[in-house]
Image (cartoon, rainbow, N blue to C red; front, side, top):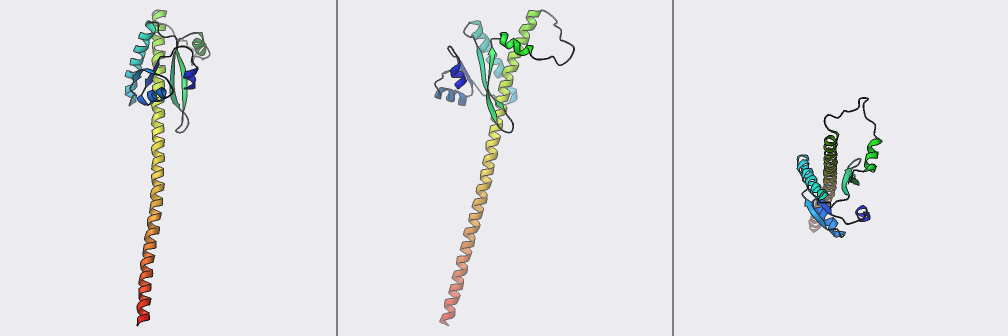
Length: 194
């Protein structure tokens, strides 16, 4: 939320999922476009396609200067951390991140076809992969969080069952003791009468 507040200019906020939309609304942001949360990995591709189409329409109209992705990224264990990634524009800052990378082999790739078409295809793929990765990481983070919650609930249920079992055994033992004392007291009383 802080990172979103710190960004300059007018913001057009899109959300994936109603929970995020509600949290954004609680902090004063209006969500202009709401996308459904993908329920599986197979549902991510259509979501990314829809986001890319909407983005391209906004860019062509000249309504977009910068595009950022905010998502959760899984961390060690069952944790996750919020991540922000600037998706557009692809400027010198973006280019420099790739200049720092080293090609994994000694053979450099060659371009088949026109440079401009190849560049456009690579940019489309870069945007698709970036969005797909963000969605997949968020989905993995959510599932890990759910799993952790379920494991915690299962552990709490186990501990509660143990406590209730001990309390039941204690009450049962108390009841047996009382009955025994009643029998012994009755026996003693009858013994005195005789």
